[in-house]
Image 1 (cartoon, rainbow, N blue to C red):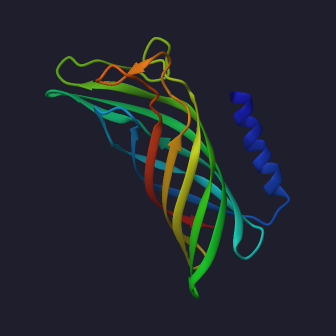
Image 2 (image 1 turned 135 degrees about the vertical axis):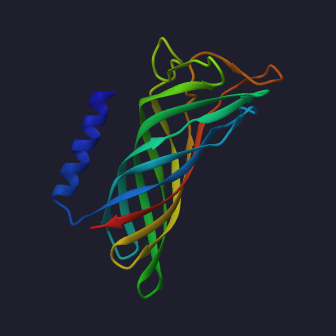
Image 3 (image 1 turned 90 degrees about the vertical axis):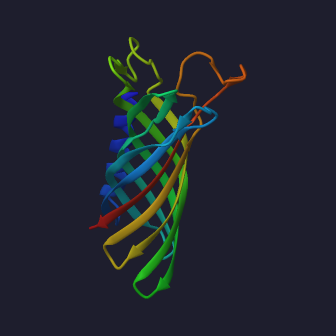
Length: 203
């Protein structure tokens, strides 16, 4: 996994080292959850990182990035609450289409796959004497560190430098090892979902 991550990062640097590209920094707030788990609810978190914009034409661009993102969910058992908050390194690989809506404003639609690598995080019980344990540790929650899914977004570019965007992610890989069942006893395959709104500055 570490070798794959290093290869992807070095590949991006090599490609853009010989291309006309603009770099940006982004940060924002997100809401994440798991699909098919009825007892879970959205958990607020953060996302921040860097991206690149390589314009092939006036309308089409390639937009990869490297983001640190908190994901997870919260649960409630009667009066007792718990949260799972894994932290991922996300690598979106997006194609973008842009068009002018005013002289200084462009509307942007982008979509493509993302790769995610678990960096850390905890599952925590929020009650008296509640315990906590690591998300990706085999002595803790033992979740899978690797995730893969689809990302898409809508946004605007204001002038030459300012960005506003809405982003959605839907994972393809079940993050838990072993079988997972719903309240009815049916086996299910939950996935990560994440929605974020953010701002950025392009250099």
